[in-house]
Length: 205
Image (cartoon, rainbow, N blue to C red; front, side, top):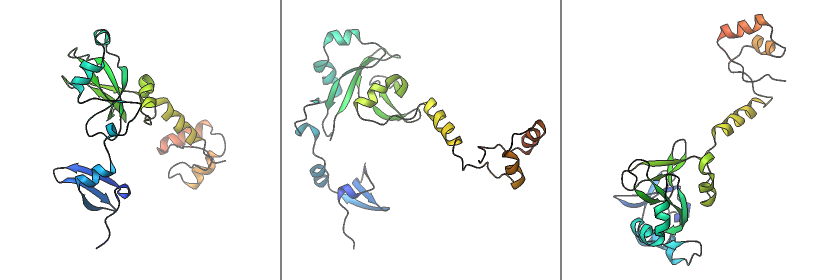
C-alpha cells in the first residue's frame, strides 16, 4: 500500500458527511480533523494586523459598524474592513449595503462565483445577490487579491489578437479556397465563399 500524500500535495479536498477527504490522482484519502487543523490553523490565532475577528455576521454588523454608517447605507456596497470568522484560515473584505429587494441593512463578504465567474454578495434576509462585475467593482477584486474574470471588451480584444496570428488557417478549407484567400477577393469570389458556408479566420501570409 502506497504512502498517504501530504495535505499540500492533494489535487483537491472535499468536506462532506464522510468528513474531510483528500483526492490525489483520482484516489481518495481520509484526513482527520486533527491533521487538517494542524495544517490549517485558524486565522484568528495568527496575530494578523490586517483584520479583526468577528464571531458572526450579526455581531459584526452591530458592534463593528457605526450606527451612522448603518443609517447611511445604500444599494452600493461599501467596504467596512477585513475580518476573519470562526474556522477561517484567512480573512476577507466585508461590505455594508441595503438590499434592493427587502431593504434590509446587510453585511457580507464576497462569495464565488456568479455571472461568468464574478464574485457576489448576498442578502442574509431574502437571499438577493449583488453580482460584483469587474468593471463596476474592480476594487473588490484588488482588495482581496482575486483575479477578475475578463470583461466583454477584454474578450473581444483577445479574440481580435488571435486573428492576427499569421499561422491561423480557416477551418476545413480546400487547397483552392486557401490559395484564393491569399489575394484580395473580388465580388465573385466573395459570393462563392458565402455559398460554401465556410468563414475564414485569417489569411496566411
